[in-house]
Image (cartoon, rainbow, N blue to C red; front, side):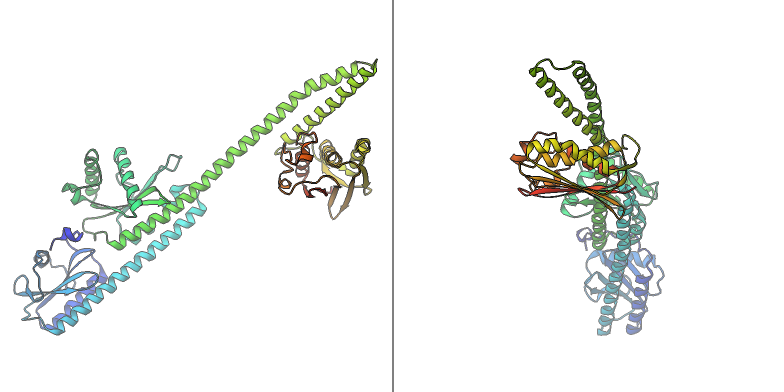
Amino acid sequence: MDLAATGLAPTRHHVADPVTDQVGAMTAAAVGLVTGAHATVLVVLDEHGARVLGRDGSPRPAEEAQLLAAVRSGALPAGGRGPGAGVLHALATRAQRCWLWLEGAPAVDPPLDRCAALAGRALEVEAEARTVTVRAHLAGAARDVVRAAVASDAPAEVVVASEADILTGLGARAIKTRIYGSTEGIGSFHALPDELPGLPAPLADAVRVVLQGCWDRQETWNVRATEVRAGRALPLGEEHRDLLADWVGLLAARGLEDVLLVPMGAGAACVGLVGLFRAADDPAWSGADRSAALDIGHDLGRAVATVRARESERRALAELREVDRYRSRLVATLAHELRTPLATITAALELMGPPRTPDDLDAAAYIGRAAGSIRALVDGLLVVGRADGPPAAPLVPADLVPVVCGAVDDVRMTAAARGVRVGLTTVEAARVAADPGELALLVSNLVANAVKYTPAGGWVAVRLESGDGVARLVVEDSGIGIAAHDVPHVFAEFFRSSDPDAAAQPGSGLGLAVVRSVAERAGGHVAVASELGVGSQFTVELPTA
């Protein structure tokens, strides 16, 4: 029998396994009683290698060597002669190939076949139990991976958390994990035990390419020291084979001669590797082992991808916050810089003295209005620039009633000129904790906005209420309204509606942004309800002081 053709790597002798040894001893004893054979031994060739199980469970090295040589010769028909005066009987089971050696038995009879069938079934049950045990350990590893992914911000921690369960579940002597990536803390590797030799850089790059192919094909890569020493074909270039041989030699010096390299991936990308190591005397990596290891590669890859995505989101959020801080500093700087020429214009206007001609009067009025508009813009920029910072002055108790009344009085003349009626309903007192200057900006912007966007013949109603710990300012109008798709954006800085009627009105797009900023800094909020062509209603609620 050609073991290389079967893909099985025989070990020198089987690793102690109480379950399998017990099955072998019981089978050998039962067959001995039925056949009268002087000695019986169960020879098993399965996915774990070639093993000899004695009647009493004790090792029999001399017979083992003879029997394994006979099994490997391939000339073993039922009832065929074995070493010495014994008989080797071939058994066929689903999971492995088995032979019974009977010393002193004259022939093979039907009871022996029945015993052999029971032995085969017992070995199959043992293999199934082994698979269940492996899956249970790996389920624990998967749970650890999920928990680590939720709790950890570092991909390496996610992988390390599962190493002990993977070692136990897959019967490995050592484990080495590596996560690929250029981000700090991600291109790290970990080993258990920690003295395992690492892959040299050129070989590590070549192995990464091989494992990407393994991930594409959904398979693992088994590197055996015997195959490397024998010069077997490997999926590496000539320039890397000597490096691999050196690395395998370092592992062999530590008793590790069978390596299973498992790709760790998510989507189409191989994001890392899991290296599992066994000794020469350990069972070869079975198909069940490889499948379970690949499943773990999937679990670890998804967990690493989750942690990386969360890390990317945090970096993006930090960058956005920095951009927003820069914007705020820029806006505040520009506003302060504008104040100096504005003050100069205002002072020059006052020093001009009384206008001498009607033209002078018109020019002075124009300059005054322009200066007022610039001053309002500067004040708005300063408020918006402090959107995430403290108010310009400490929050102090302030009565909203005179502020609202003053804002309404300020717009009455403009409203009358536009043919807009303005009504006011207020309470006797409504005290809130706010910056008085910013509070005046909030109210004046809301009321002036309502007048500006209400056509002739329309009305604006201002209502101030107080109760249940809240001061509520409602400004309602019968104006042009706001399109439904614009409503979510009206409080954004510099937003201008695409509606032609709204776009026809002059403005900087800062008024409602100022309203929102002031309300939020005072611990309140603002809301809007509007219908295009019908009108709008803005409501500001502030906690009372």
